[in-house]
Image 1: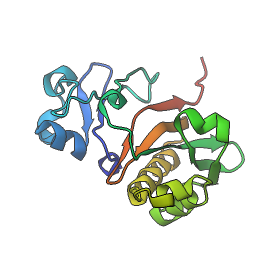
Image 2: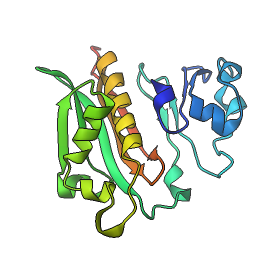
Image 3: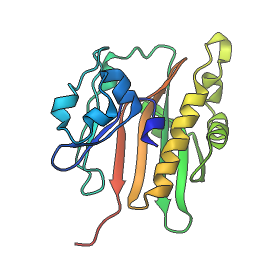
Image 4: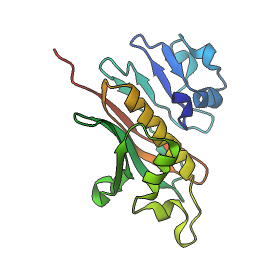
Length: 198
């Protein structure tokens, strides 16, 4: 599932050794995933790629979820892009729920959201995005270029599958997911585990 994400993702264990290195990470660093696995993160990932973008490294995501986050949005051009929020949470009655909405600064202001039971397919994810009030901005309103709705839908579907297969995670959220003409890029994320008994 991590290989379906649009940007580089590296997951390390508590010792700092790589346990997941997705295809985008391999492409952006020219390091094969098989070569990276088991090595220390610092040995395979310089924290900046060739385009001078910072990286995220999720460390030990299921045992305390300590994370180190970098900020790729500092070096991305945001013109002609729309920020979305995509996420999922476990509902005590219904199980995993997928969510999409306006992201970034507008997440709480506009309260523009669509919700479905997870996991969702890419076509269901696209329908969720098309149901948003900001959907015309994604599809090219008033002469603006159309954005990569399929990439945003793929990211939402992948995140919903992670939620459905990992009940130990109470919430997963990417906010913002920057959708541009040719890609969807996760700029910030949080994964919250269920409270564990002391």
